[in-house]
Amino acid sequence: MTTVDPATVAAASRGAAPRRELEVVGTRRRGRGWGLTALLALASLTVLVPLYFAVVMAFKTPEQAVRGTGFAPPWPLNWASFADAWTLTGFARAFAVSTLVTAASVAGCLLLASWASYAIVRNWEHRLFRYSYVYLLAAMFIPFPVVALPQVKLTALLGLDDPGGVALLHVMFQLSFSVLLYSAFLRSVPAELEESARMDGASTWQVFWRIVFPLLAPMNATVGIFAFLASWNDYMMPSLITADQTLQTIPVVQKIFQLAFSTDYNVAFASYLMAMAPTIVVYVLAQRWVMSGVTRGAIK
Image (cartoon, rainbow, N blue to C red; front, side):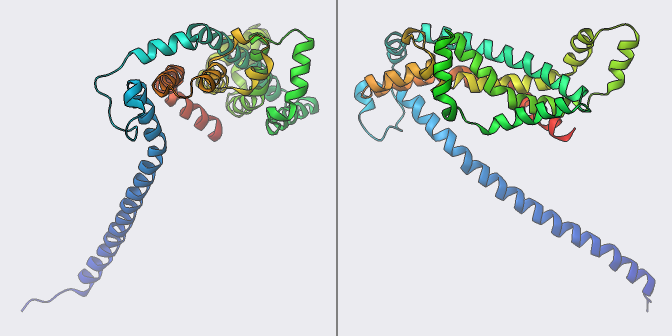
C-alpha cells in the first residue's frame, strides 16, 4: 500500500489553483476579444455599406440606377458616368483649386504651429507664453459659423475673398489643435540636445531647423494629415468666402452639381467618388503615422 505525502498533495493543489485562475482569465479575455471584434465589425458596416452603395451606383447606367434597391452589382460596368461627371462639374478646375488651397493650408499649418509650439514650450516659465497657449486652446471652442459673418466682411475688405483667403483661414482655424499636438510632443524632446548645439555656436533658428524640426517628423505627419482632411473636405468656408464661383473647391462644386442634377444618380455618385478618392488614398497610406503621432504626443 502506497502512502501519499500530505506536503506533496498540498504543493500540487497550490500549483493547480493558479493554473485554473489563468485559464479562467484567458477565457474571459477571449470572450471579451470576440465581443470587441463583433462590435468593430458592426461599426465598420456604417462606413463600408455607404461606400459600397456609392461605388455600385457610380458604375451603373441611368436605367440601372433607377431600378431595384441600388445594392445590385452593375453589369456591364458603365465608365461613361465618370466622363460625364468630369465634364459637367468642371472637375479639373475644381480639383486644381482644392489642391492649391489644401497644399497652402498644410504648409502654413506645419510651419506656424511648429514655430509657435517651440516658442511656447521653451519659454514656458514666462507668463506671456503660457497665456498665449491658453488663448490658442480657447480658440478651439469657437466654431466657424459663430464668426462667419465677421470673417466674410473682413476678407472682402482686405481683398481676400478668393482661394488664398480660404487657405489663410484654414491655417488659422487649424492652428489651435496643431499647437496642442506639437506642444505635447515637444515636451519630450530633451533640452540638452539644444544646449549642446548652442555651445557650438548655433543660433535659435539653426537649432530649430537642424535639430528640433527633424525630430518632429511623426508629429509633422499627424498634423499634416489632419490639416489635409480639414481643408480638403471643408464646404462652409469656401462657399462663404470665395466670391468667384469659377474658383470654388470640390465640396462646393459637388453641392452645386447635386442641386442641379439630383436625378442623375450614376453621374452624381461618380463625381462623389472622384472627390473622395484623394482623401481615401492619403489616409490609407498615412494612417499609421496618424496613430503613432497622436500616441506619442499623448504619452510623452
